[in-house]
Figure 1 (cartoon, rainbow, N blue to C red):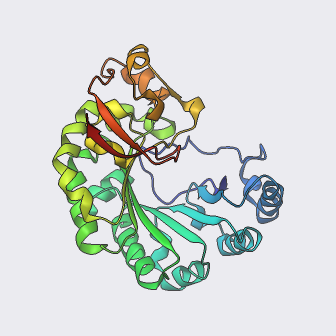
Figure 2: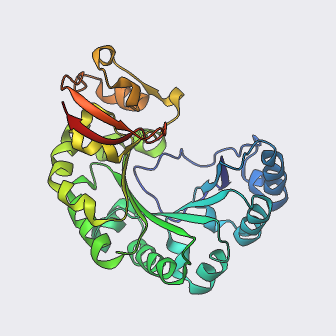
Length: 309
């Protein structure tokens, strides 16, 4: 269950999926829809819809920038003691130790931090914000230093035209500087919001990304866990399939005509509709190899292993 806390951000990422501001809150209101009392009322109403197996995901904009973020966060933790509380963040506010320690008072917590480049020049060029790399990387150091064993810290990288050539360097940076991180996630960009608006600058195809990922495959085992988000199966070699997760709602994806002939369609995410609108579906073909699929039983992560018959 996603809860948008704030529509503002201190980065200006050109591949962001958010639209131009101002955008309405879920109450159908502009900025006042994010006032503390309105947020608390919205969260109370959501409480009846959330089961113990659901994660409560705090998003934005940048959620940690809300003027009363810690108050909202503590309210969420008190009201959802059985659920995983997940914060999607650029990590910059965790540059501050006191803030980091305050957030890490919650046990049932995971924090997903976005990192877009291996150096300040590359990262800050993508975020279009000076010093964002310095603050994000220091934020990650603080989170990993002060977290307890029940808390999950993950690093997310969005793959776009601006970043795909640096994926190896990003993984090397994570391996050397943030080796204790619980999870690394490589996310193929969604063509929505700013990413759609800036498509000429950030747009990329699966065919462009594939050879870069193939070179990096030996690095995947270097991390506790590595995931690939927003990838249809035929965009990758079968050895990558155990890393692939279904990560988009059904209404946002589609299958092209050749997919009807693919015997592995039932394990596949499909293709983001925005991608098909911009780039079409000619690069997607049914998989003809005879493969033995080791199933997980998890809809979102369906494939545990792949062997050739």
